[in-house]
Length: 147
Image 1: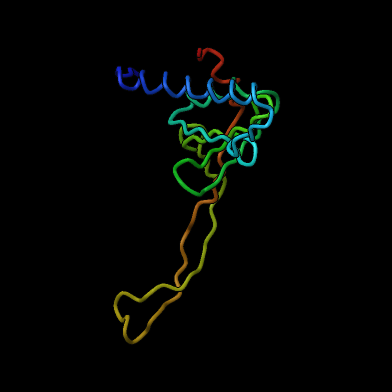
Image 2: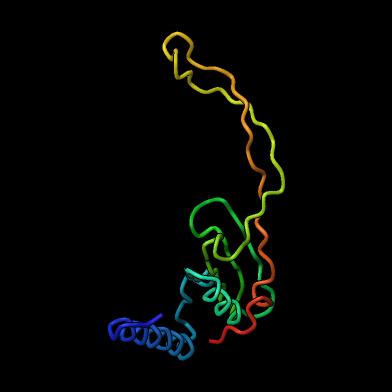
């Protein structure tokens, strides 16, 4: 991915801001810690497995994976850097492999398209997929990704 000069300047400014905050916290023990990273997790949004791997390498010790059906960023990696709590979000379909593990029939009430006014619902049976998301080890498969 190429970055523009404006993106590079914004990135440099962000990093400089983090350093200034760290310096201020270090020099003034009465300065309260920011809420993000202590009271809540410091959030990072990634768009690819490679970006997630890079962030996973930054995290210390144990990393906890969480997979949901909630939205686009349905894969979450929880960890810490020192005492800073970090949460890295990634698109589940970029990180995990969708696997159909079975099917089952589900019966539900739906509007009758031919006689909606006379018969408000009919019983139908359909086949739905039971799926799991196999989100194997984050770092093992991408050992060649460099920072």
